[in-house]
Image (cartoon, rainbow, N blue to C red; front, side, top):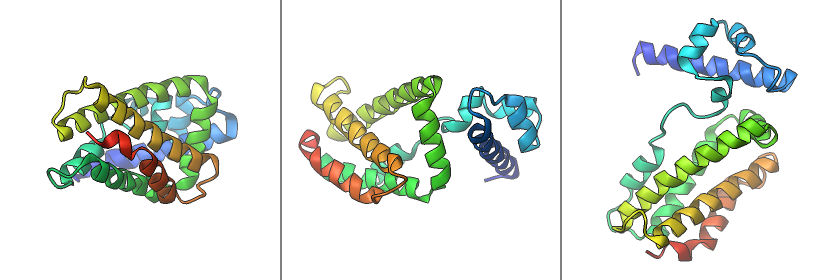
Length: 192
């Protein structure tokens, strides 16, 4: 990572931390971009260079190639019923490495603010479309194949429910245990 990218990541991280603190203190709707920028020690123009709107501080910026890399790292020809649980355990491990307090705040905001719930639903749709393409490629089938779409929907729902259950209970029980149970329950849909 070059100096420019490191500085970009530092500025974005600080803006995210300050935004979360302000959202908790005064509420999402009452918090302005100007307040976030001031708390982060940047100008509103700098904020807008990194984020389109204040809700962007709660969502991943840009495209995340994690799933593509994780599936590409699995052995060729490995059945989906074996590859998918491993990939999603790795995905869960990423959540475990994150700041749990920040995750809980984000989860509560996304659950309680209508505009954020709507954005989350759009993001989930994008994630599902990506997963459909990945499973179709891996299975050698078309993305519009019903069984591929069903498998992707099951995986997406299993992961989302495990993560939501974990967050709703303040990161207890262990997320890997929930993921293992969720993936075990949907294995039949992965027999493509």
